[in-house]
Image 1: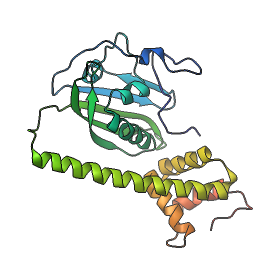
Image 2: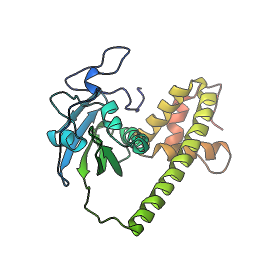
Image 3: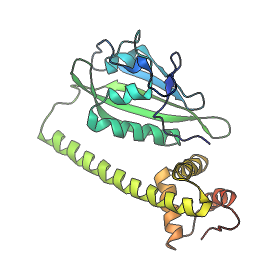
Length: 240
C-alpha cells in the first residue's frame, strides 16, 4: 500500500523527472481572479495526478498555460503559515477525512488573498478513496475586518494548533507501537495507520488514539481495528 501523503504528486500533463521537482512548478506568470471566484480541483492518488479548473489557477494567481497542477505548487501558493495545514488536510482527506480550511493565498505579485479550501474523498464501490475532490473559493473582502474577527481568527488558529499537536503526538506514539508489533519501519507503520483509517472510516488521529489506549490498558481496541491489526501482526507478536 502506498503512503497517503500528497507531497510528490504530479499533473495529468507534465510528469516530474526522477530525482527532481516538476520544472512547470517554477515561478509562473501572474493572473487575477475577482473575489467570489471558485476554482475546482481533483487529485487521483492511484494515478498520482492532479486536475485544476481554469478558475482554480486564477484564484491562485497562476497561468494555466505555463503552470501544471501539482502539490508543490498548491502548497507554495499559500502563505508560509498555512502551507503545512493545507498539506496535512489533503493527506487526511486521502485517508478518508473531508475538510474545510480558511487559508491565505499569496499571489506571485505579492498580493494576499483569503480563500476557503474544501475537500472531500470520492470512494469506489469497495469504499476505498479513489480521489480527493474539492473547491477553492476566494472570499477576500467578504467579511469586514475588526477586532472581533481578529480575536476569532486567533482563537481558531490556537485551537487548530492544539489539535494538530495532540494528533501528531498520538500518531507518533501509535507508530512506535506498530513498529514493535509488526516489526516494520516508521513509514510502513504510518501506511498501516492510513490503511486502517481508510477501511474503518476513522480519522488517522482516532485510530492512533485507539491503538495507544489499548496498549496502555485504558480501553479495548475497536473490533474492526483489531481485525486489521491481527492480519498484519506476526504470530510471535500478538496484540496486547
